[in-house]
Picture 1 (cartoon, rainbow, N blue to C red):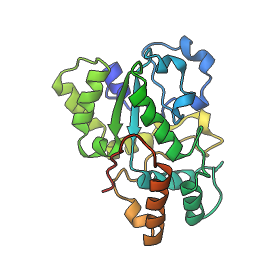
Picture 2 (picture 1 turned 180 degrees about the horizontal axis):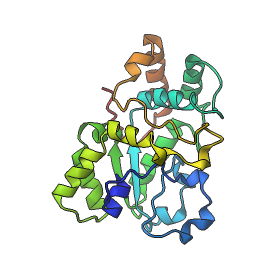
Picture 3 (picture 1 turned 30 degrees about the vertical axis):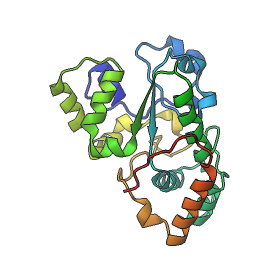
Picture 4 (picture 1 turned 90 degrees about the horizontal axis):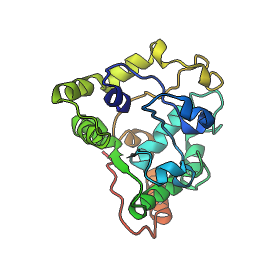
Length: 234
């Protein structure tokens, strides 16, 4: 979505450039406009972003779907983060035993949310995964405004039509979705980033007991937050 708005193009951009897996010394050799994705926690993002010199789009998703999606994703990789069962992965996740790119999900979200509230210099747009799925055009409008991309509604509607989950999955299965950077992760170099694209898949995965334990862990680990977080679970 960002690439299409920045470059006024309806082409699929392929797998994103991830800060944590790129040679950052070469960043300034790339042409403008540069776009990077990241799973890093707030303390590890570039200082320029914290100072407001780089725009940040922060996307959140309800943690139960995050957990289920992460398990399915990592289970398709050759160099898996976790070797074990769904239940074992679940207990690692809710016990903070699964750090990814700097911290567990709970710490990651807390650090970002606190930073967004306490750092007025950071230029950050917050989007929810569930809104991107249910009302993509509204999110496209917000993003276009934030990126100062002055495009007519006709083009933005084409972006909306192009960026359906099924279209992106189809494009990702072409040569555009392959990259040699991830050959050690997946045999064909195509990251398994498109699965269902739905809201509430956790209901099909978590048992009643696991759901109760998840809720207990969330209340414990997010206690003390100076504000409430609103997640969409279905």
